[in-house]
Amino acid sequence: MSVLDRFDLSGRTAIVTGGNRGIGREIADALAEAGANVVVANRSEDSGETAAEELADDWDVETLAVPVDVADEAEVEAMVDATVDRFGGVDVLVNNAGIVVHEAAEEMTVDEWDAVMQVNVRGVFLCSKYAGIEMMESGGTILNVSSMSARIANYPQRQVAYNASKGAVESFSRQLASEWAEHDIRVNCLAPGYIRTDNTDQADDVDPNIDEVWRSEMLMDEIPGPEAVAPAALYLASDASSYVTGASLVVDGGYTVR
Ligand code: NDP
Image 1 (tube, rainbow, N blue to C red):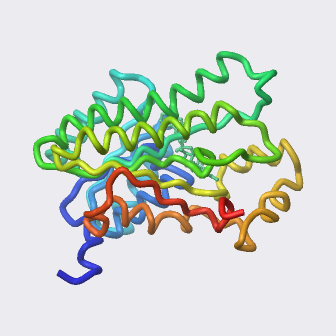
Image 2 (image 1 turned 45 degrees about the vertical axis):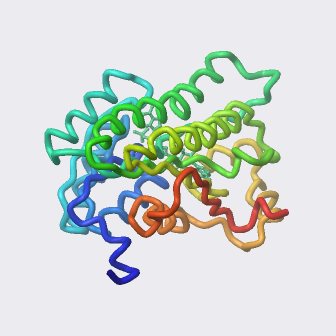
């Protein structure tokens, strides 16, 4: 098998939460280009449908859009059921859906804290649980999009709930990798640095010059779009990374080096 063949996902089925926009959309594109049938799973029905249609047209794969709140157990179970009904199983799960609240700890409400934990931690658990039950038949890969924020303090924005949630995703992933290795399920994290999306656009409200502050800590000059992380996601989702589990791959333009 050639090295490029190891990235091939032809005939496999991938669920990408938040696959309609931002980093998730670019990951969905990469997996579809590699041949996977893709399930776009996010809250907004219209944009999910649009993304699924575009993926099918662009890459000649089968796609499905499933509206889901990843924090809702019944909806997550239904999302996995819909995937199995349509494609016969789940081979790849990308837990990408995530939110951030920029608020100082002393001002943060319990509702704000809970909202972040519901999506970023509970959602990762629920999707892993129900997709994992399906993967136990024939193995699979779970890729959790954590963040460099799991390892560092971000500045100047205040976001303790977010950083706590991403730390939880990383430790959850290591433990799950250990528990599910016997089922041939690999579990890894992708930990991006700053990537231009709607998520980071929210930080412009904190400081209009925030890009400059961030870039001063990076080794690369520009903050890229989601295309900068999608190839790493394909690596971790495919057989190219068959000897990698319980790991976290940082893709941050060198931000965490300093
Ligand atoms: P965006 O804000 O651009 O997109 C967020 C995505 O999450 C949307 O697709 C949204 O769907 C989905 N989503 C949010 N809440 C839910 C929910 N309850 N159920 C289902 N889907 C939901 O974010 P990014 O693309 O920037 O971020 C993607 C991931 O990458 C997140 O986990 C984020 O923490 C992480 N990350 C981002 C970085 C960055 O710099 N951008 C850096 C490091 C990590 P909908 O449109 O339907 O609301």
